[in-house]
Length: 67
Image (cartoon, rainbow, N blue to C red; front, side):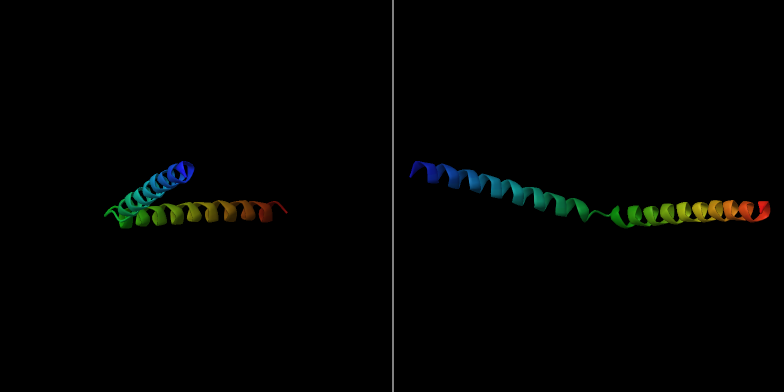
Protein backbone atom coordinates (compact mmCIF):
# COMPACT_ATOMS: atom_id res chain seq x y z
CA UNK A 1 0.00 0.00 0.00
CA UNK A 2 2.82 2.40 0.84
CA UNK A 3 4.42 1.77 -2.55
CA UNK A 4 1.26 2.92 -4.34
CA UNK A 5 1.10 6.09 -2.26
CA UNK A 6 4.73 6.88 -3.05
CA UNK A 7 4.25 6.15 -6.76
CA UNK A 8 1.08 8.25 -6.82
CA UNK A 9 2.83 11.17 -5.13
CA UNK A 10 5.76 10.87 -7.54
CA UNK A 11 3.37 10.77 -10.51
CA UNK A 12 1.57 13.86 -9.26
CA UNK A 13 4.85 15.75 -8.91
CA UNK A 14 5.94 14.73 -12.43
CA UNK A 15 2.55 15.68 -13.90
CA UNK A 16 2.65 19.05 -12.15
CA UNK A 17 6.19 19.71 -13.42
CA UNK A 18 5.26 18.80 -17.00
CA UNK A 19 2.15 20.97 -16.82
CA UNK A 20 4.08 23.94 -15.45
CA UNK A 21 6.79 23.68 -18.13
CA UNK A 22 4.15 23.43 -20.87
CA UNK A 23 2.33 26.48 -19.49
CA UNK A 24 5.59 28.44 -19.18
CA UNK A 25 6.67 27.62 -22.74
CA UNK A 26 3.26 28.57 -24.12
CA UNK A 27 3.58 31.97 -22.46
CA UNK A 28 7.08 32.40 -23.89
CA UNK A 29 6.06 31.63 -27.48
CA UNK A 30 3.26 34.21 -27.39
CA UNK A 31 5.63 37.15 -26.95
CA UNK A 32 5.47 40.34 -29.01
CA UNK A 33 8.87 39.69 -30.57
CA UNK A 34 7.72 36.64 -32.52
CA UNK A 35 6.34 38.47 -35.59
CA UNK A 36 9.47 40.61 -35.83
CA UNK A 37 11.78 37.61 -35.42
CA UNK A 38 9.78 35.60 -37.94
CA UNK A 39 9.96 38.41 -40.50
CA UNK A 40 13.71 38.80 -39.93
CA UNK A 41 14.19 35.07 -40.47
CA UNK A 42 12.21 35.18 -43.73
CA UNK A 43 14.25 38.14 -45.01
CA UNK A 44 17.50 36.38 -44.04
CA UNK A 45 16.40 33.18 -45.82
CA UNK A 46 15.39 35.04 -48.98
CA UNK A 47 18.69 36.91 -49.06
CA UNK A 48 20.58 33.62 -48.71
CA UNK A 49 18.55 32.08 -51.54
CA UNK A 50 19.22 35.06 -53.81
CA UNK A 51 22.96 34.92 -53.21
CA UNK A 52 22.96 31.17 -53.80
CA UNK A 53 20.97 31.55 -57.01
CA UNK A 54 23.38 34.19 -58.33
CA UNK A 55 26.44 32.10 -57.48
CA UNK A 56 24.96 29.02 -59.15
CA UNK A 57 24.10 31.03 -62.25
CA UNK A 58 27.67 32.37 -62.32
CA UNK A 59 29.13 28.86 -62.12
CA UNK A 60 26.77 27.66 -64.85
CA UNK A 61 27.71 30.63 -67.05
CA UNK A 62 31.42 29.94 -66.61
CA UNK A 63 30.91 26.30 -67.59
CA UNK A 64 29.08 27.31 -70.77
CA UNK A 65 31.74 29.86 -71.72
CA UNK A 66 34.55 27.31 -71.27
CA UNK A 67 32.95 24.65 -73.44
